[in-house]
Length: 202
Image (cartoon, rainbow, N blue to C red; front, side):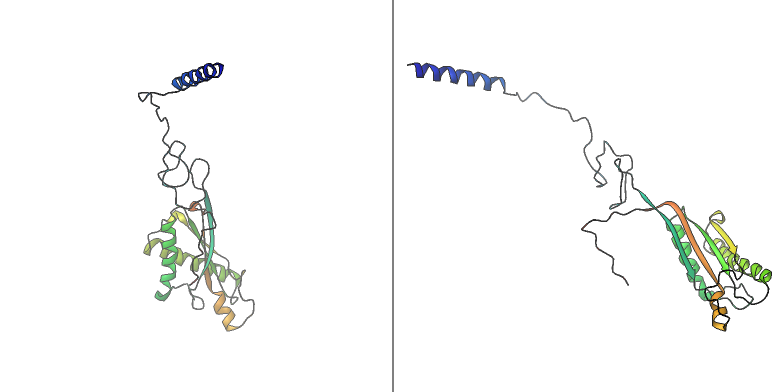
């Protein structure tokens, strides 16, 4: 008899507890923050400060992509005749490549360096190397519509030869121009992960 009474009391207590824990359907919760990740960068909208982050870019806690500064030097394969700063038509495609890159990254600037072979006086070659750099700058500005405030020209006379010998081939190689493209906040810093596939080298 005592066992039945004890069992009855236990069931009553359990039933009473379960009745208190029942949640009725008319009670609801309201979502305060937007938990979506629209640009798929791993940061929810509620925290997002930079929308449309480049997919795969390194980001901070607020979804803003980090940037890698651009600093690239390219030797333009423009061969100048002796004592000349005339650019032959066959070399304009190289100048255009610089222009295309600068249009792709509109915050970049370029410095064109002019160089000469060690023939003639230093002063004459200084003016000549400056004119060679100026000729490339003029092509970028006039032919390819790059704003002049993004362009700088500097001549180095024969101070920086790539071939210090005095052969005809050395003189030909030293008559050249270099394009140095620099810029900040232009290129997304892409993060590497185990699923990154290296681009095929062509």
